Image (cartoon, rainbow, N blue to C red; front, side, top):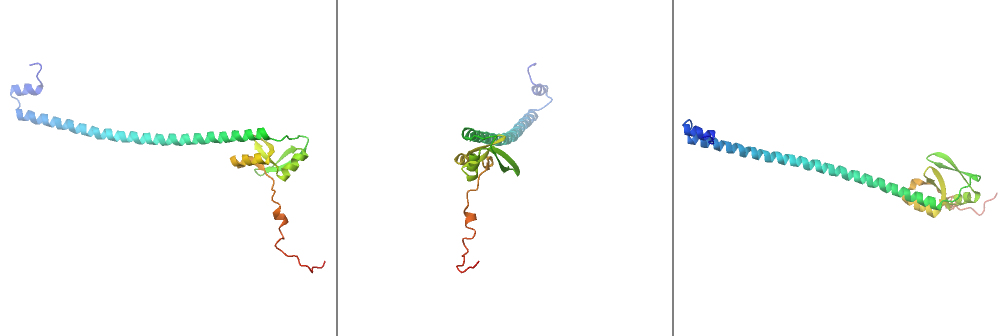
Amino acid sequence: MKNLSLQEQLLNAGLTSKSKAHKVNTAKRKKVQQKQKNKVEVVDEAALLVQKAKAKQQEKDRLLNAKANEEAQKKQISGQINQLINMNKLAKNDDGVAFNFTDNKKIRTIYISEALRESVVKGTAVIVKFVKTYEVVPAPIAGKIEVRDKSRVIYLADTDTSKTDDEYADFEVPDDLMW
Protein backbone atom coordinates (compact mmCIF):
# COMPACT_ATOMS: atom_id res chain seq x y z
CA MET A 1 0.00 0.00 0.00
CA LYS A 2 2.94 2.27 0.13
CA ASN A 3 3.03 2.93 -3.61
CA LEU A 4 -0.64 3.79 -3.98
CA SER A 5 -1.64 7.37 -4.57
CA LEU A 6 -3.82 9.21 -2.11
CA GLN A 7 -6.77 8.99 -4.49
CA GLU A 8 -6.46 5.17 -4.72
CA GLN A 9 -6.12 4.89 -0.98
CA LEU A 10 -9.31 6.92 -0.51
CA LEU A 11 -11.12 4.72 -3.07
CA ASN A 12 -9.96 1.53 -1.29
CA ALA A 13 -11.04 2.92 2.07
CA GLY A 14 -14.47 3.79 0.59
CA LEU A 15 -14.24 7.48 1.45
CA THR A 16 -14.84 8.57 -2.15
CA SER A 17 -16.52 7.23 -5.26
CA LYS A 18 -15.08 6.40 -8.65
CA SER A 19 -17.13 9.12 -10.41
CA LYS A 20 -15.89 11.82 -8.02
CA ALA A 21 -12.29 10.72 -8.65
CA HIS A 22 -12.92 10.85 -12.41
CA LYS A 23 -14.33 14.40 -12.11
CA VAL A 24 -11.30 15.52 -10.10
CA ASN A 25 -8.90 14.02 -12.69
CA THR A 26 -10.82 15.72 -15.52
CA ALA A 27 -10.70 19.07 -13.71
CA LYS A 28 -6.96 18.69 -13.12
CA ARG A 29 -6.36 17.91 -16.81
CA LYS A 30 -8.41 20.93 -17.89
CA LYS A 31 -6.51 23.13 -15.47
CA VAL A 32 -3.15 21.90 -16.80
CA GLN A 33 -4.29 22.39 -20.39
CA GLN A 34 -5.49 25.92 -19.61
CA LYS A 35 -2.14 26.76 -17.99
CA GLN A 36 -0.28 25.42 -21.01
CA LYS A 37 -2.52 27.45 -23.29
CA ASN A 38 -1.86 30.57 -21.22
CA LYS A 39 1.85 29.89 -21.26
CA VAL A 40 1.84 29.72 -25.06
CA GLU A 41 0.24 33.16 -25.23
CA VAL A 42 2.74 34.57 -22.76
CA VAL A 43 5.58 33.05 -24.74
CA ASP A 44 4.18 34.64 -27.91
CA GLU A 45 3.98 38.04 -26.21
CA ALA A 46 7.51 37.65 -24.96
CA ALA A 47 8.64 36.63 -28.44
CA LEU A 48 6.94 39.70 -29.91
CA LEU A 49 8.66 41.93 -27.38
CA VAL A 50 11.98 40.29 -28.19
CA GLN A 51 11.38 40.79 -31.93
CA LYS A 52 10.46 44.45 -31.40
CA ALA A 53 13.55 45.02 -29.28
CA LYS A 54 15.71 43.25 -31.85
CA ALA A 55 14.26 45.33 -34.72
CA LYS A 56 14.78 48.51 -32.71
CA GLN A 57 18.39 47.54 -31.99
CA GLN A 58 19.00 46.71 -35.66
CA GLU A 59 17.64 50.11 -36.71
CA LYS A 60 19.85 51.81 -34.13
CA ASP A 61 22.88 49.84 -35.34
CA ARG A 62 22.07 50.69 -38.96
CA LEU A 63 21.92 54.40 -38.12
CA LEU A 64 25.19 54.22 -36.20
CA ASN A 65 26.86 52.38 -39.09
CA ALA A 66 25.58 54.97 -41.57
CA LYS A 67 26.93 57.75 -39.37
CA ALA A 68 30.29 55.99 -39.01
CA ASN A 69 30.46 55.43 -42.79
CA GLU A 70 29.68 59.10 -43.38
CA GLU A 71 32.42 60.18 -40.97
CA ALA A 72 34.89 57.82 -42.62
CA GLN A 73 33.97 59.19 -46.05
CA LYS A 74 34.46 62.78 -44.80
CA LYS A 75 37.89 61.83 -43.45
CA GLN A 76 38.79 60.17 -46.74
CA ILE A 77 37.74 63.23 -48.75
CA SER A 78 39.65 65.50 -46.38
CA GLY A 79 42.72 63.31 -46.80
CA GLN A 80 42.39 63.46 -50.58
CA ILE A 81 42.12 67.26 -50.46
CA ASN A 82 45.13 67.54 -48.16
CA GLN A 83 47.13 65.30 -50.50
CA LEU A 84 46.13 67.38 -53.55
CA ILE A 85 47.15 70.59 -51.80
CA ASN A 86 50.39 69.17 -50.44
CA MET A 87 51.48 67.80 -53.83
CA ASN A 88 50.50 70.87 -55.89
CA LYS A 89 51.03 73.87 -53.63
CA LEU A 90 52.99 76.75 -55.09
CA ALA A 91 55.89 78.17 -53.11
CA LYS A 92 55.03 81.09 -50.83
CA ASN A 93 57.53 83.84 -50.11
CA ASP A 94 57.57 85.24 -46.56
CA ASP A 95 59.52 88.30 -47.83
CA GLY A 96 57.11 88.78 -50.75
CA VAL A 97 54.04 90.92 -51.24
CA ALA A 98 51.16 90.74 -48.79
CA PHE A 99 47.93 89.52 -50.38
CA ASN A 100 44.77 90.14 -48.36
CA PHE A 101 41.59 88.05 -48.68
CA THR A 102 38.58 87.20 -46.53
CA ASP A 103 37.76 83.90 -44.87
CA ASN A 104 34.60 83.62 -42.75
CA LYS A 105 34.19 87.41 -42.70
CA LYS A 106 37.73 87.88 -41.38
CA ILE A 107 40.55 89.46 -43.33
CA ARG A 108 43.55 87.16 -43.73
CA THR A 109 46.98 87.86 -45.19
CA ILE A 110 49.30 85.59 -47.11
CA TYR A 111 52.79 86.58 -48.29
CA ILE A 112 53.57 85.51 -51.84
CA SER A 113 55.88 86.55 -54.67
CA GLU A 114 54.76 89.25 -57.12
CA ALA A 115 54.43 86.73 -59.98
CA LEU A 116 52.28 84.45 -57.84
CA ARG A 117 50.17 87.43 -56.78
CA GLU A 118 49.51 88.22 -60.46
CA SER A 119 48.50 84.61 -61.03
CA VAL A 120 46.06 84.77 -58.13
CA VAL A 121 44.56 88.03 -59.41
CA LYS A 122 44.20 86.64 -62.94
CA GLY A 123 42.60 83.47 -61.63
CA THR A 124 45.26 80.99 -62.77
CA ALA A 125 46.14 80.31 -59.12
CA VAL A 126 43.76 79.96 -56.19
CA ILE A 127 44.08 80.28 -52.41
CA VAL A 128 42.84 77.21 -50.52
CA LYS A 129 42.63 76.24 -46.85
CA PHE A 130 45.15 73.61 -45.79
CA VAL A 131 44.70 72.29 -42.23
CA LYS A 132 45.20 75.58 -40.29
CA THR A 133 47.06 77.59 -42.93
CA TYR A 134 46.44 78.82 -46.46
CA GLU A 135 48.20 77.64 -49.59
CA VAL A 136 48.18 78.67 -53.25
CA VAL A 137 47.47 75.98 -55.86
CA PRO A 138 46.90 76.06 -59.63
CA ALA A 139 43.30 76.67 -60.77
CA PRO A 140 42.70 73.13 -62.17
CA ILE A 141 43.68 71.62 -58.82
CA ALA A 142 41.39 74.08 -57.06
CA GLY A 143 38.58 72.86 -59.32
CA LYS A 144 39.19 69.29 -58.13
CA ILE A 145 39.21 70.50 -54.52
CA GLU A 146 36.01 72.47 -55.04
CA VAL A 147 34.23 69.37 -56.33
CA ARG A 148 35.10 67.55 -53.10
CA ASP A 149 34.58 70.44 -50.62
CA LYS A 150 33.63 73.98 -51.64
CA SER A 151 34.47 75.41 -48.22
CA ARG A 152 38.19 74.69 -48.70
CA VAL A 153 38.49 77.03 -51.72
CA ILE A 154 38.96 80.44 -50.10
CA TYR A 155 39.88 82.94 -52.80
CA LEU A 156 38.98 82.42 -56.43
CA ALA A 157 39.47 85.50 -58.59
CA ASP A 158 36.43 86.72 -60.51
CA THR A 159 37.66 86.46 -64.09
CA ASP A 160 34.32 87.52 -65.60
CA THR A 161 35.07 91.07 -66.80
CA SER A 162 32.29 91.20 -69.37
CA LYS A 163 29.92 92.83 -66.88
CA THR A 164 32.05 95.95 -66.47
CA ASP A 165 32.75 96.28 -70.21
CA ASP A 166 29.15 95.78 -71.31
CA GLU A 167 27.37 98.02 -68.79
CA TYR A 168 26.42 100.56 -71.46
CA ALA A 169 26.34 98.23 -74.47
CA ASP A 170 22.55 98.50 -74.70
CA PHE A 171 22.64 102.29 -74.99
CA GLU A 172 23.30 103.98 -78.30
CA VAL A 173 25.62 106.96 -78.40
CA PRO A 174 24.16 109.74 -80.59
CA ASP A 175 26.32 110.92 -83.52
CA ASP A 176 25.45 114.58 -83.12
CA LEU A 177 26.60 114.83 -79.51
CA MET A 178 28.56 118.03 -79.00
CA TRP A 179 30.91 118.50 -76.12
